[in-house]
Image (tube, rainbow, N blue to C red; front, side, top):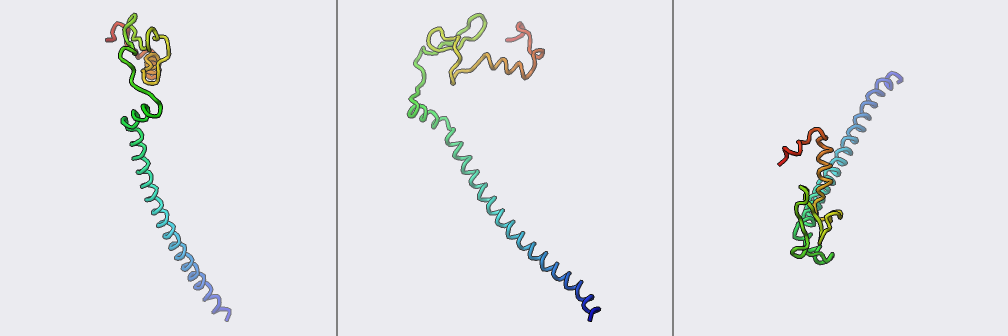
Length: 132
């Protein structure tokens, strides 16, 4: 009897391991299917949100928002002056406002040249006479 039990015990162990591994494989398959479904749902939501962002960033919508909600309008003719003063571009508001910081719609010429110099280094700059 003991010898029979010793012969059957490994077979029983292998059978139990087989059943356990099969149930784990099936459970993992169900989980994988659920995760793939959730992944597809999240991808479609991402696409929808990207479309919404593109719509919200469209120039026409931004202009309409600026006019209606913020009360903004293009500047009156002659309100913005740009000219040359000592070889430098002066950007300013009404009158002699070239010393002021530029507004959100105006380029920051000073900081752009500093950033460009920081990226390329001071030695990479062309001499002043060689610049167009």
